[in-house]
Image (cartoon, rainbow, N blue to C red; front, top):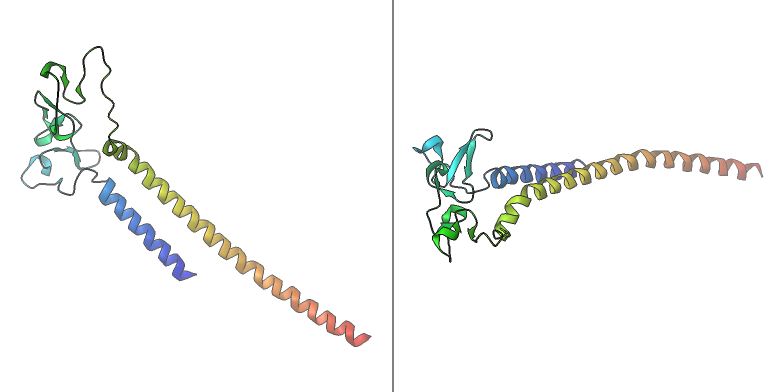
Length: 166
């Protein structure tokens, strides 16, 4: 049983490391740059609460996310080009006019970015629950088996005595 516990602890450590490296630095591996403001690369800003560099919000770019996207561009790191006039192009959402609602940001990347931390924590919760159930079952089985063994031995000895008396 101890080797199984070690195995599950190793898996748990791997998942924790994965969370710290993937979700904690959700934007990029190269978010830290020496000689920059608070050590953050262009396209990132320093988050004092997390004490790490985080990706600029949609519609912002440059060092410490100090600038809105230039006219005619929008989105993450201002990579998207508007297909409408500059007046109708919103720096975060792209083309829309007052008669339309702003376009929905349902790109897979944005959906994953919002749901991934919750999914990872759910996975960890399920793994911990599974480990607890597994350990509890093992402990319960070990307690039951010796008591069954004693009952069988007592029944066997009674049977021999009863047979001898007849």
